[in-house]
Image (cartoon, rainbow, N blue to C red; front, side, top):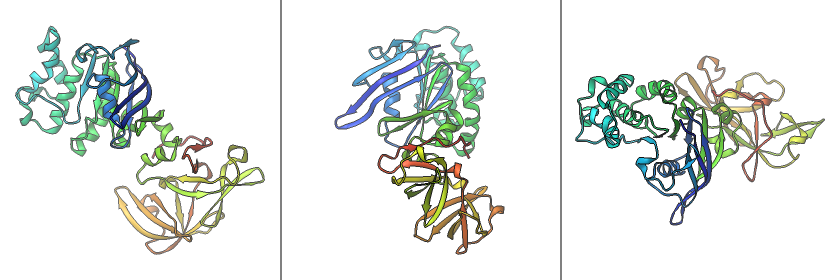
Length: 367
């Protein structure tokens, strides 16, 4: 199989820039999720690789060979779309086989049967798309993309239009299915949980720029910027403006008038420089006990969220944080006074002006 390489790819439509110097490598058998907010350029990137759009600058290579000037059918690429894009007048069997027929492949019937068994849709091969459930449509589209053993596989948010139960099941099944194909897989999604569950690496795309490419746990624990940190986690990361100061070789910062020790030495940041301090809600501890370094707060509201309860906390200066914890761990109700703590290693520091992360806190696992 072949490696997919994007080299400084640019693409604009009039005054709107959709890709700005995008460089990315996907190895054979690797799954890279392209994740970012709506309008960040994710689908445009896939369509340039597939040959639907031509890049304004840069190069796209498969197996070391530029494919920019190659027609779509000669690029060795399989693609599954968000809206399935099945031929409505064809059966599921014919939809799956359509790509093979276009290339003049042999043993088409046997290949379709084998692929449909793999994706558990052999019982609906005679059905047309209007007779299929969304889950069956999604599996049919995947089968069509996979059956030709493409060198590169492009998946454009393929689970967006399926129900929650199937989406969860496919998050478990897709990684092994894609790795079995040995294709270099690029998987577009707007769901950070999906990206973290499926991908070997995540490429975070914001406003047409790749701002961080790393393993899922690395991006969660060490986001490159405030913008990346906000995209991962539900509830979103807490942020407070601070100006760290040196204290016997260590750094402290004040949140709502309470001094907090940071897990860094003073060489890692300029003292008294304005920063954003970020702490994820899962790392916030809420207690009735006033121990050293605890921040006084009031519980404004408690919202049940499945296996967790989310607390809205208000500090004395009017700023607010969120805490997420198991319901049985709650020690206080709404409108009660509490104290807020977090481990020093849980804090992330970001430059106030640029939003870029400062220092390298220890690794933590995603919640």
